[in-house]
Image: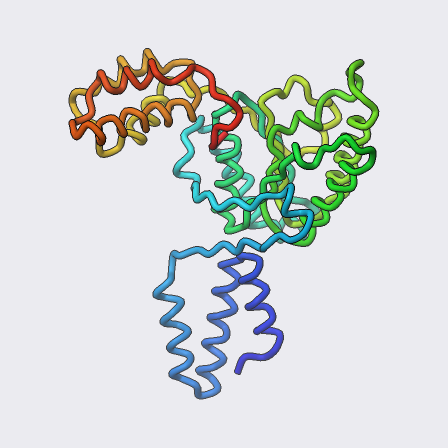
Length: 323
């Protein structure tokens, strides 16, 4: 029969979203029940595991009190296969995933997995989406830290809030995204910078350096040139995103038009009109064209796609998703 330590371990693995560990313990429980003569129970456990094989579960721990005001839970379901970027960027993301999954082996050899990642590049190129991918691939909750809520005009309050965020990072294993990170990470020597902002940045640097949690800390910025040089040294990896090249634009158009692609669509002509657009802009343009085809009850045409390109502004405001 299951002993108390197995039950606790089973619950703990579920709460932490560790599906592999959950299945391992459940399998051990099934074997223990069979050995104790509880064959029906053992078969029921084994049957449930087989029925849900390949299904992953991610536990979003509820946030209460002040933390709920400046830390948001996200349930985006992006996977690595959804990300259309260069092979270099994809391989670096895969390396983060590999190191995290095998972090125990690294620990045993005196090493630490990449857990503090800085993502830089233009808006709409996949930075926020990457945070979601890391969370989903690792079956971890994704938390977005709202820096506009963390930073206040009251002396010392911002640093206190940052401390609370890092306490959460240590308590609840997950992926934590600090978006628009340049809000606190700008150069400390800027002449026009106030003392309180310098204190906030120093606090963040200290907290980041002290962190030894099993969470992933992701900082994203569209303006890497303004970041304090000391910040880059605190991150385990810095990944630079760029606007999509021709090959990526083709993949995005084909993927987003999906079942609406037909011989009337000239991808090469569309390519010439989409150069210089971000991944997010291209996705929105394709969605606009598809919606027009659906609402007009007509096949998608080249004219619909080109009109969608013309109607969509060339730069997106900062509310765009999948940054």
